[in-house]
Length: 345
Image (cartoon, rainbow, N blue to C red):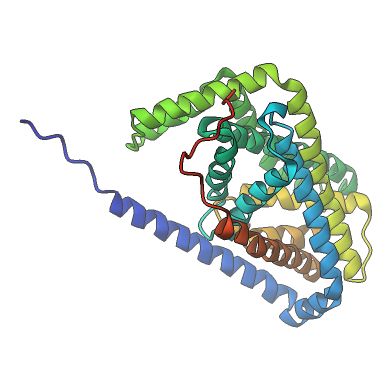
């Protein structure tokens, strides 16, 4: 009997990926260290001391926008599916905690959301909900970043080169997200990604391809029949992103400085755009703080205040994520059947 052609070992590829990610993590740490050094470690320490118990208000504000994001996901579910809001909140929080804590990429939390939600809805339906929710989340983020760019056009009228740079960063994301929504509505996004994986010599197998086809079918049905739910979810997700401006405003107030709402709005939108653009650096480490520092210098608050605000927001997110990670660890085990009784569609 003829032997099948030998497949290349996955071990070398795996080690190369880990090496690249480790180098990117080191790059992020170097960037962060450079910005802290340029701002002055003593100044950063004094600024952090000024935050004090106000850190609790920052945590409360973060929990508010996380609640809104969970509401956006919950609105995608059908009433007959019977999944309570509080459970969606816990599932989404558990997944986001992994996204924030994983050192090698913002990807691990989405499968966790799908696995936990599958116990309520079944696998294909849960994965479809998570996929659509993530898409709407990015659409809301894009609306926030775009509106922030418009605000920046008035705020930084004397710096057209800065606005040109922001637009240059924004346009590719608009194109990519438009393509994703188009392919989801056509029902072949995952099929196309599967073909891309095969081209890269990463075949998925017939069983996985069948599951992806079912997920494509469900997401396409959502875009065709649930536009009102899409708009409601998008409104809530966008509001959650707008609250990031309140986050910046509160951070600056806790430092004893003042910032206009328009400047806080632009700073939050620009910071989000920088973090999104530098997605290949784990957690946008260093890049996010640098973005804050750059904008704060432009609006007259100084590099040190910008780096401090970036650090405080990062520390707050890590604290919440560490606590939320307990949801993943202590989540009840799946039922022996492993499938929910609710229908997929």
